[in-house]
Image: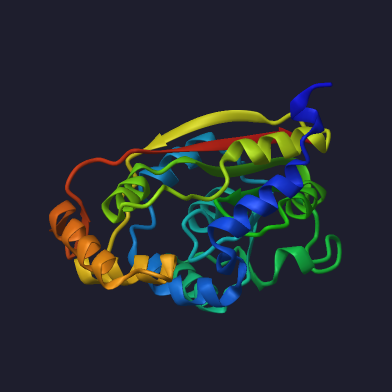
Length: 268
């Protein structure tokens, strides 16, 4: 028997996700991060690289699942006939409304919904194209993927992480083993078990995380890791003071920490 087929990838994802950061599946977690997302560059290298690979035309409808503050929603709305932007976080969507208004875009429909609870065909109609960028933040990946597939009339684009060197450097500074979200290969194999043979394109980006200050970086990771000791906080602040530099009013890493992502896609 093929060992990859015999593995329960849904259960494997759930176990790995819950071991990493179970609170990331809650709307409260993303509500608190809305301002950080808004303050980050919204048309960064990652966004540009992903947009190059999305085949979206003027007559098509697009569903952006886990849209956040609109990093992809806004440029997609400039290409597509209509975009439905869906997110569980109202503070994220409040920023999206502001950003869409400032951009003069009137073809975006914004919905606050938990994707796992949304009814396809009732709450959310079928769209030509479904996009889900780095938004599988749930232990129930299989249910999410099934619904992404159901909501698409033509094609689904799904991106997820391969590697984040800066995150790994943070863990090294703490002297801890590196823990991350389950890798994209879980999702790819889960799709295969669902009968979906997805194409995979590797996206390499120098996408830089931004902070208001080294102290804000510490606060970010304090909230993320939850159980930093006083010594670990001291070590981490020293790391950020050394590794971050101020530019254009924000603090970014002094040297490149290129991240890599998998863009999975499949046609219906």
